Image (cartoon, rainbow, N blue to C red; front, side):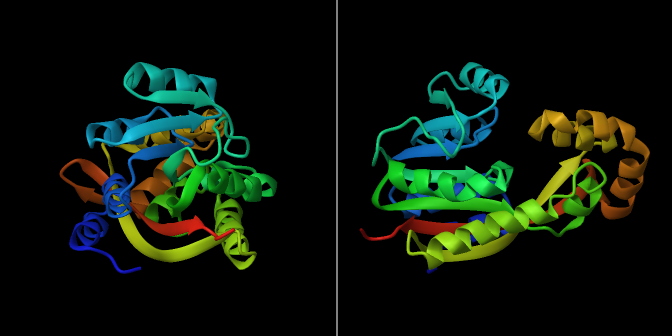
Amino acid sequence: MQTPEALNAAFASGNPHDVVVAALRFAAARTVLDVGCGGGRLVGRLIREGFDATGVDPAPLAVETARRTVPAAGFAEAGAEALPFEAGRFDAVVFMNSLHHVPAERMADALAEARRVVRQEAAILIVEPLAEGSYFEAMRPVEDETAIRQAAGAAIADAVRAGRLRLRGNVVFEETIRFADVDAFLARLVAVDPARAVLAERRRDEVERRFRECSQPDAAGRRLQQPLRIYWLAPAQD
């Protein structure tokens, strides 16, 4: 993928939201769907950057939080594999660390739905964490996502090989995530998936040990690194 200076700068910053904003501008997108929007942080950023952004998430509490936090945007409660939008509605679809939260057997459906709701020649941007890095190692006592992260990459590759999507490019970059302490780290893990709460509490000592071993000190407390891959896809020609 031939990347402009702004997108290269976003990769260098390690901020995935900066990367998405720069990529959407490069794609000349205006209407954007964030699939797996959680509490609406990315949607809020997109609204502030001038995009017409919509979010969708299967968790009712997440959608409620997003609506309260970003009242200027539209949100819907639904899974990625059954999007409640008409065909060709959006200029771009974004999966921000969310495809691997779709059950492996439904990932192909989620990608098909993304293809359905974007116009031809639109951008489908998928940002996925790799099964490596200090953040990944620190979280493994709570949930080892090795298999499901690999399944997300395989689902994308399968869609490209089958001619359903075209891969325009992919880039690996590294996100630095800072935490005041292990409690902040555990809070983030549980916020992403509340089902982790019981195991996070049960394995707190092991998580704290790994957090100390894997993280590096800095002015904000401790920092962890998570390599991410962004896939830039487009619908295959009909």
